[in-house]
Amino acid sequence: MERTEFTKDDSLIIKGLAILAIMLHNFFRWVEPTTGENEFNFANHTILRFGEVLATQPQEIINIIFNYLGHFGVQVFILISGYGLTKSMLNKPQCWTFFMGSRLKKIYPLLIVAILGFIVANFIINNRLPSEFVWHEIGLKLLFFHTLTPNEGLSVCGPWWFFGLIVQLYALFPVLLNLTQRYGTKILAGTALLSYIWILTAIFCYDHPGDDLLAMQNAPGHLPEFCFGIWLALRRDTCLSRWWLIPALAVFILGNFLRPFYPFTFLAVSVIFVIGYNDAKGFIKQHLFLERPLTFVGSVSMFLFAVHGFLRQPFLNIANTYNNAAVSLLTAIAFLAGSIAAALIVKPLYKLLVRLLDKISAPARLLKADKYIMGCTLLLIAFVGYHHATLPFSHKNIEITQNQHNRKVRHMTENSITADMQYLNMAQIKLGMTNLMKVSVDLEIDSQGTPSDQLPLLVFDITGIFWDKCCMPETDGFLPVHYETTIICPIFAHFVPKTLKLYFWNINGTTMRYRNAKISITY
Image (cartoon, rainbow, N blue to C red; front, side):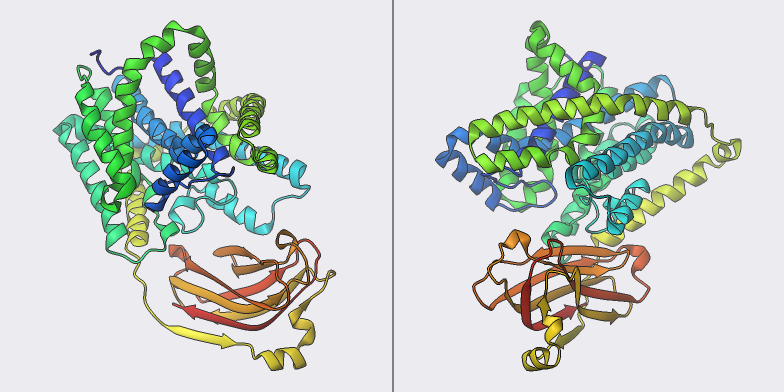
């Protein structure tokens, strides 16, 4: 077997394969039939759904495979990032502050052009500018705090969660490399072990809502793959035998059925990919019709990553309207082509911003305080990550009940939403200092024959901290409905009083009635 060493051409091909997998996953995960995926949390029904759909609708095999497995392209990017950074730093050692400055000068312009592209696309597609809430979410992303803040990682544009993760890995990389060069690769093994302990502790020892486990959106959730990339770059004589496929496949399969094995699936996929690519790269490079497109896509992969998330909606509308495997595939190809065109458009702007930032040099005082800055940054990441991983659920309870008779007789206008009303307040509840709360709402609604996608939305809002919406169902007369959500407050908001607002947002200007509303808050 050949040595596991990737050239620059290999790196571009690998990035091309990874970004195509990610883009097709982010497209097909919203196209019927959907299977779900074990990306940020675990659910064993997803693998059962995968098998069921594959057996009953084999013509949807491309949709199903990318729907369920495409997100593993992220692990390939993490792997090749660790590998590439190690190769570059071995030749040009840098202090932590200089290294982070050079990384941020590249990633910040990418985030800025992504945000500008999102604003333009949103205006063209939806004919409106971002709301105040969206601007708040964008601000968190500019600070790279979005993955450290509950419910914010996937907001605005889902794929952008990766910005927060990669910046954390950048911050950890010089420390990992330095310690590994001093004490050997046991540092990488120990780091991976600590990462798994962190994830399993968060999963099994603390009460987390299923979608709010932050481990897999942050560095502790993906350090093993990153360390694997560093290890491959340092061990130049390393050969991964094909025999490693057996334990890697076993772990991957078990991780799709059993929760304790779930965190290990990402490293298992990384091992499988490296062995598979070593076997396939000769074939790829011998066939220009494969090598050239993959190399080109890899060369614009970061721009594709930045723009594809907010470009998919019009293509999704077409695919779901026709609900046909052939149409879905053609629409996915059109989506890829449109994203590539957009990537080429934003590329010159990105290069301009990079040139402008390159003219800014770090003050000498910053370089002198290198270890202090590094230590404070790592402590901040560790503290916030630990805090959210081990967030306990304390119990208090308040209930607010709106009596059906009183609401109907004394407040008739408040439980009737008319076409000219944009907002209707249902409750405004002052809360003390709290870090986690569960809010449930029970009420009866009469949609008056209006389709569900046109009805007013029920909004949960804590200004500057949390915002979520729930869609109303179409009903025939008054029928009971139930909604609930769990709100985890970011650390900066734990110790201040908050006000929870619940209101109906009549975004489409339709009519609806509601009555007998009961709001329960546990915190």
